[in-house]
Length: 279
Image (tube, rainbow, N blue to C red; front, side, top):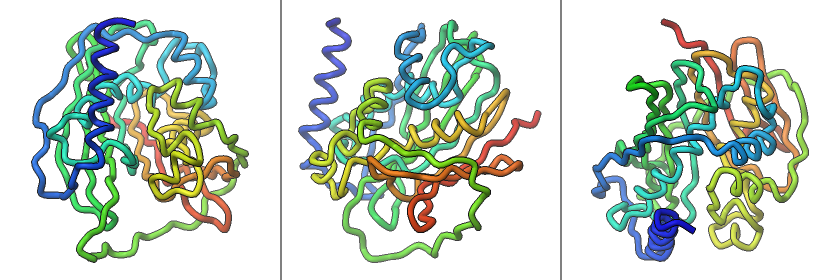
């Protein structure tokens, strides 16, 4: 194992060990640095594992990365920032609540890229505190992909409530998916995101979940694999309720770019949309 990998694991371990001592709050200070990694190339074996677990065709005809895959490439940098001693939210138990992606051009799987990640800020949430993490990817000096993700640390709040969120009428059902109990472990192995809330019932219960829950990024990737997201596009997704593993969900979509996942009783797990990038 290389020195860099060992260093990353030690940094991550430090973030895990510090988690019980963090006192999250929206007004806390947070790391302001921008982490940059040059010369990034895609590991083709990990890419194939990712495509398989998410439902994308392996070895696409145009040789392009799935629209969600740069999130995987930038995830180690994001984890380094969120593992930092100065990051006020506990790493353990963080829940991904939303993502917005803009892909400006096709992303060849054989390309070389520069990745940059920074924390944009903290904000109050009715269930705790959210952090916004920004990831950008460049090729040849040009921005080719960028995203904004929010991560929630759940903790008691002052009791303030947000206005009830509108829930749109269900979209036409396209398919029903039975999700195996090992989806979180398989996605974790392909993506590097091994948050214990996604792995086993026992580790998930430590953070208040009855069973392991699917990664938010797996759910949106699985939807996009079914729905399609071609060319220059924007993707928006909100993760509204955890998807328990194992379980069954219905995938709905319409001709206007909207998609969703619903569970038993019509419970909304995810709402998303894809839009062609005008320009």
